[in-house]
Length: 398
Image (tube, rainbow, N blue to C red; front, side, top):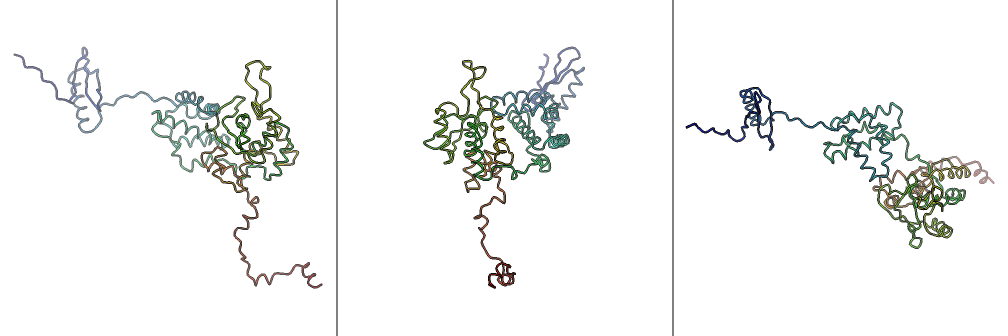
């Protein structure tokens, strides 16, 4: 009677034939079944099997397993940008920055190929081409956001932007000094500019300069957002490219109505009827066809009127954003307003960002701040030896 074939011990793998001169190996490694084949003889397959089993027993990996090739960043960015369009108001700008700056440099690389050295070469190349450091910084921050999404979805193991050394980050630091950003330094000049503007631009200017709203938020205001009795404004939308959009931080906020702004809004409420948009004209697009979307006041219109008003008042030229939101923040700080409350009014998540808007200058400190450390440091003997002014000496002689 023929002896029954004995099975190989567990974990030793097996060799089997799949055709003439076609021997294959099967073994288990890391909880998964592995295969390797196309050996001409059984003896050769047995030798390979023994080598694999020995490597596994010694703690070494068996035959290398081919992995699927990693996707290029250009391919991964397509899906990411499409998803971003549904959740971020600045998605159009992000697409432009990716296609114009990031994609030509990083598009043909995989996530694992991008490290701090590659990013530094990108920064140096962009600066050498004449691109503004602030713009380079915007692209780097966009790249960091992209890699955070890749890490979350398992396409990358780490975000290389977060590990950049200070020497690299200083290359794309903005060249402008935030303390030198212009704003209207005196409230009497704010009043002069307001009186030099025509309606409704003057009302929009007052809302920006005394409530701190962004330009797009001012244009998106409706009368149902204004509570004149309670003295507050509910900011919950903005206008981007002529269309209503979500806020920059996607969170509504409450802004107090300053006593200087309240009578302006009350008078404008009576004049407009207190319904609908605060600054949108009373006609529709495309010839006023039924169902056409409303036409909002353009930001370019506000800027044009502001330039004329500043020239009339003989004040330095500045952007609408600086004349309104920056002026509000700086005047708030100059009048001893709380920086924490200012951050809530401006819609900032951190006071670190708010401090950039409070552009204090040494010559704008009040007399009380300059007289806080009151002490006489001049010795009395030195005071006695000081020369007597001629006018005072003449009076004493008389």
